[in-house]
Image (cartoon, rainbow over the protein chains, first blue to last red):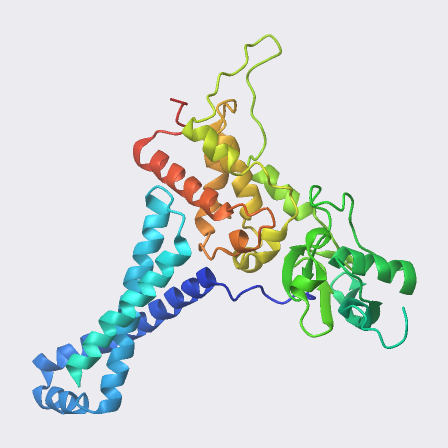
Length: 116
Length: 254
């Protein structure tokens, strides 16, 4: 195969693809940890309290902002993809992808402001 | 031109052009100095190199006016129809990088083997399935028929393989039929004169079919004719899903 050419990337819908994949993988890694922490409520209340104190750290709150952003961008980006595949075609796909990022930044920003 | 008078910018500079040389999977970039010309296209640059620097340089072209789809190459790592790409539009500094199309085997220098690309058109059933003969009446199709509009949106494809070279799904999955073949299949699926929509849906719903598409949109982003194969692939996804759920295949024209 042709080794001469580099990959072609760097346009809005490719970045939307990348954001969807990365957020999906990050959420898949996060969910088992999330359920494990929830399970501490039943198995080890003291450990759960210790963890909740840990979540008061500013760095953890910033990380939570990132997590909510990933969740939102995966949700809205996924809705765009499902609409693309199941509903009649709508031309402004770049605008829809940008809107999904914008809404995600807004929602995760609100979450962050509430947290601090 | 008298001394001291300003020269047009294009006469003052020459281009440093890195051109991929080699065959099979092996090779490397070779640098050429090419005089800058007004309204110079990438194909002009490649032709100048072959005519003045190295007659062994191998490349492919035919019409020079953006109709035949022969001259597509990677220019500064982006797939482009070189006959209609002006140097002004893609030049970064004074340097150009020209390589054979991505995702296809290289025969020599800038010439790729297009067989895998066209074989996939056949695999996608992207060919007409006629039932009418010379004694049949003309098919009556109104210009505003929605299926005709869908079909018409893809018929300006010139088979240049720019979309195929741009597609990361093709790069990651050699069995993937690719944007051009799937767009052609969608065009025929919507053509009222094509009588085997089920064969098309069978072909595009299997391994390597339309459901492999990740909707990255590189095909639409780079298509030199501003077509949108992603739209066609989304249409095939809907049509295959509808047939799977309801058993209904091709819709007849209203």
